[in-house]
Image (tube, rainbow, N blue to C red; front, side, top):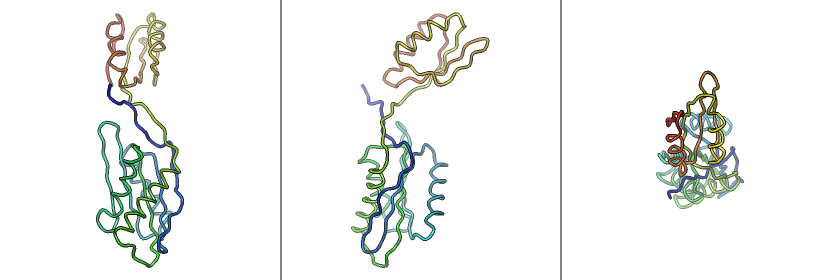
Length: 201
C-alpha cells in the first residue's frame, strides 16, 4: 500500500531570532498551495522587513506532483535557499513556504556560516509551526435519484467518506472526497450500484 498521507503546516509562524556576528536572521513559514500565494507572502515580508538585506526562501507545493524552488536572493550560490529547502525535506512537510530574512551586521559570515544561519533560521521557523498530517484524497461526483439517497448515504458512512459538496435538485449531486488508498474500493462500490453515476473530478 503506497503512502497516502502528507505533512503540512496549518498557519503562518515566526521562528525565534537567530544571531551570528551581528547579523540577524528571522524565519517565517506560510502554508501555500500555489505560486500566487507564494509571491504574495514574499512581497508582504519584503514590505514588513524593508530594511533587511536579503529575503531568501524555499518552498515546496504538491503531494504527488511536487514543485519546489530555492532562492538565494543575492547570497552566494546555494548558501541560503538550499539550506532552507533542506529543512523542508528533513521535517517532511509540503505545501509550505519558508522565508528567512537577514539583517546584515557588518561582518561577513562566509559560506559555511551562511549555510548554518539560513538552515537554523528555517529550522526555528518550522519548530514554531503547527505541523499536521493530512490524507491525499481523490474527488468523485455521484449522481443519482432521490429514491437512492438513504442507500448512498449508508454506503458513504460505512466507508468513512466525506461529502465535500452537495446539490439536491431534480437529481442529487454529491461531491465526495475519498482517501487515496481507499478510492478504488469506493469507486467500485458505486460502479456496481445500479442507479448511481460516478465520475472522478
